[in-house]
View (cartoon, helix red, strand yellow):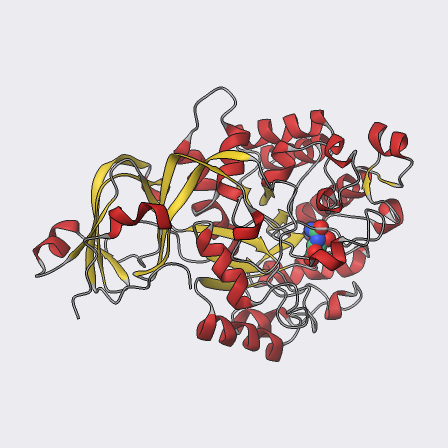
Length: 446
Ligand code: NCD
Ligand code: ZN
């Protein structure tokens, strides 16, 4: 589906700029792949008829991980499926995604969890790490059986789409997550404060006469949660951070040595609530696009290490759903196929990019929050590899997306930087059509 799959057992990725944040490595090197593992390039070279990928001019890095994706299966397969969502993931350079549990039914029970894991194994084209719900049916009242869910493969817990509002339920959730060393990923929003809002509450919403979402709904929950982290010692991850004060709260918590991490979405690094002026439903998402000060604070927070991860919050909704108009359309935009280029744009204003930092935020950092294998390009590591052309100019064309839906405000935008190939467990799962010459020598050997 995404380019050609190769049965090639051994190949060498030759001449690329290898960036491996786990060992602060950044220099030109050949990388060998032997079956589903990384091998010493010299060994793969020595093998008869080993294939070759020409990576000159490309960055070769561990496979990107998107820790915040809505795959919609089970229950909303008209928006996305595990097959289409993971197809979009590899097209965007991701070799693994963590999927949110706001499915129907929610991933609050073993059967649904196992269903997702099994479907991903059968038809997924990248790795899928399911996130379990914090509370039963995501209703915020009864904490799930975290022990059982973790034993069966849930990597973290989140009620994403909703925040857990009740203090004692949240305290209980933190205590249980702490015992199991699992992170709580909170969608921070007090509905009592945000209720009815369809965009950021401020100058633009006032001018448009639209109900606004007060940034305090996000910030107050982060504040409450940090107090509970202080009390319980649980690992806490703020999902899709979006306001200046939220970034400052996380910065202070980190300075206090608390186990607090956070992620930011590319759209919150690039767009302000001004983008909602035309009331395009593709500019509607939770949290909403905020002010220029918030965008600047998120960028600063990323650059100074307060924000650990880039995550897309890939939230597919159909054209029909988005056609309901700004007030009624469901919130959310897709992100898997645009994240890399948009992040480059957001972080390269002064002309240069700290590629090692950017790749760390999309590999090692999310893996550490999720507690999954540290991505790396050292021999014997799983052969999950992304090849990036940092200079590739292209125009975002939603009609070419591999995912099911097209809900993005970035259609038609000219961007730079693109995944040329995505290798998952030694298998080429995506290859950019107009870079075919790089793969000519990737001949199957069996
Ligand atoms: C998410 C979705 O569609 O599942 N939407 C979004 O705008 N991020 C859920 C959510 O986080 O509200
Ligand atoms: Zn959310």
